[in-house]
Amino acid sequence: MLDGKSQPNVVKAIRARQEEMRTKYAITPEKTGKMLWEITQNAFDAGHYNAAVSAVKELNNLAGLTIHRTQNLNINANLDKMTKADITKRLNELLGVDDSFSDKDH
Image 1 (cartoon, rainbow, N blue to C red):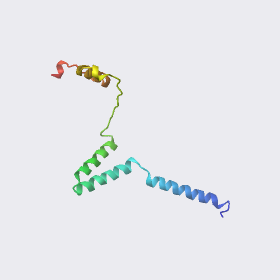
Image 2: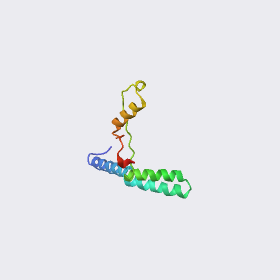
Image 3: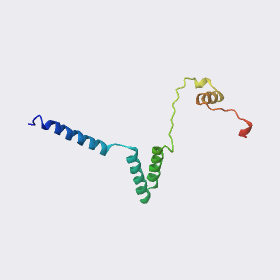
């Protein structure tokens, strides 16, 4: 059994080891970027171009060069009673799309 003096040292050792593990296995943008770059190079060298392109896309997302946006709209409408023009007009209103043309558009 441990005496009272050695317990603080054991606790310190456990905490130090926990911090070491946390640092080693932490997911960071730097580690992720390095891993994706290595995947890109290895996949390209092996002729696995689809995997290389996918890794490059993920790198671009990580770097903020591309942004994936999704938008869900809950629309309560009776489509059976709406014409195609009504539906188009309503969707344009909801999405903030201006469907009018100006002289500059032609």
